[in-house]
Amino acid sequence: MIPSSPKNRRFFTGFLLHLHPRTVPSETLRYSLSWGLGGMAALLVSLLFLTGTLLLLTYQPSTDSAYASILILIREVRFGLWVRNIHHWSANLLVIVAVLHLLRVVLTGAFGPGRRLNWIIGLFLLFLLLSANFTGYLLPWDQLAYWAVTICTSMLGYIPIGGLWLQELFRGGAEIGPATLANFYVLHVVFIPGTLFILMLWHFWLIRLAGGLVQVEKNSPEDVSVLRVPTVPNLIVREAAVGLALMAIVLVISIVWNAPLLEQANSGMSPNPAKAPWYFLGFQELLLHLHPVFVVFVWPLLGIAALFYLPFWHDSSLPTGVWFGSDPGRKLVAWTAAVGALATLVIILIDNLLLHSGEAVAVNILITRGLLPTVLLIALLVGFYFLLVTKLKHTRAEAVMAGLVLMLVALTVCTIIGVWFRGPEMRLVWPWVQQSL
Image (cartoon, rainbow, N blue to C red; front, side, top):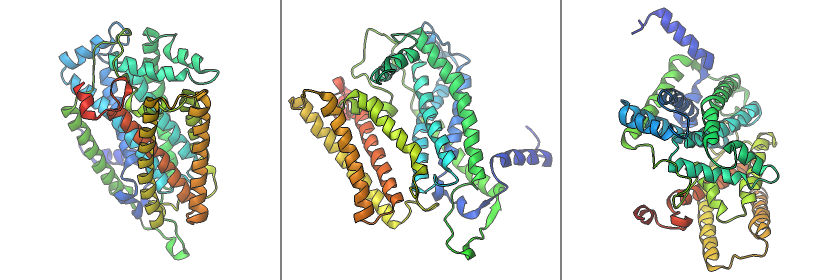
């Protein structure tokens, strides 16, 4: 054990202060301001780096030996199953934590002037996290991974003009095989972690330059003075408490539930149903109701463009440091989430009945299942915005917040239905019926 000398303590403190300022505003120390979601994401990434390195000691990235190396890991290597479970659950929790972190940034007005670049970097980080999960999904080379990746890469073919080229680029050919596994392995082990590490450091550095977490805006000169306290131990102790609690949760989950592993990949035998990874199941659910070009290309493009433009739209961010901006904003979010969830569920059920009754057959599904729903959605969002701003007298920032919550809730409902309520041939079933099939 390294002795706890003053020199060692100074070295450790100096390292921490490269990531944090020497003092922080006391009001930003409360857990309810951020719930430590950014720190949680950083810890989960660290767990993934550590466990991923250990997994590489036994994993063999070839279609002939990948599945066998996983079996050796979980059956013959001491603690190998536990390490794989930690890696799996850390990756899945990271997606949830990252989305909640993005939502927290929106709900506390933390993407306005002075933090716009960090919002953009955060979006790239979210994309990298999803890419890391997706590329790692194929590496076990079992039926679950093979067919999930088959579905997702098939979606690329619907992108106009360059879709088939992108599909072959990721697959390394027309079909999923050794070249696909090699591509995903390099992306998962080399390119994505390296890029992720650089952007994370940049992300945290920009937070420090912006003065740390967002604070409540001061309305008078008397309020300008802010009580600041030393980072060590005030902030560090809180971060350590959150980190240790999260680590305990991950370790316990990894003991109780094993990461899934089906039979070895077989291109001639598709499981029924064949589903994408859960974080893409919302889009797979939309594919059952809309034209693929709009689900895979048009809607994601519009959504990404809106997210990137958002911080540059004047007065689009809430007052900083106050959840939901105000009490009316809190009520607006609650009503928007409830109505959005109910409306999404009703639309899916009605459309499902139409599909089974044959009433949805149309001459041109590109229009009836693509262009028309897209125009209606845009009209709905525009009408919703003007209703909130002009009639109900909400601010632009509150209307933007409500719109983002509405879209996230709708996608969440689609994901829940795809995960638990879609059975053989992607029919709607009750979860307990699906498990018995």
